[in-house]
Length: 240
Image 1 (cartoon, rainbow, N blue to C red):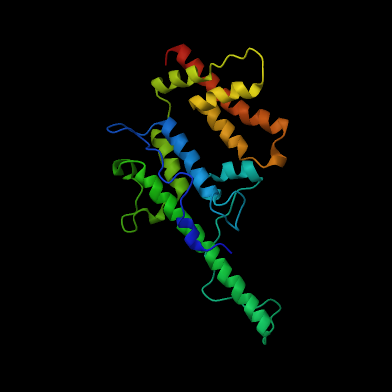
Image 2: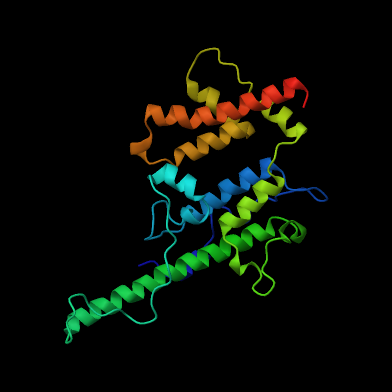
């Protein structure tokens, strides 16, 4: 069983990218980048609760369902005392009692590891932006302890994640990737190196289970990002 202290080891991203430049608000580009960094950090901590480590802490229920076929249910806190062995035996054997205690101890270790991981990631995210951009979230008495990572990311996207005119033009420029033959991997690699929605789509795709990486799934996944790009270009052409 992984001990909860392992959540304090160095993540792939020990410090998250800043969500904004000094004197400026967070941008959609930076929010998406920080989301990927949080996904990498959360998935690097092993978990008995789900696939890809603790990525269920940083993915929305819809995103997790896309990966695994069903939304993830956050585990409840285990009971303080071990539950009696199954079967209603009033006089359990020493082996049964030992096994019950082992399961109860492991359940608490897994739960505390999950909570420690969430706390560490939340602190990382808070440090990635000035306090003024979080001021609507803390509870009057409990501070940020009531905020999940998903709540914080939703707040960022809803408040600061909309495209600005400058970002629309930047995205359109990045997505203009000519293909003159040759391996398609080179075409994909160029936008990945330059960052942007296609880069984000490619990195998300790599997290799909191998069995789910079908042609139909790939078409639907990348079409979503292609539609976003077309909408951006249409808006720009119309002069908005």
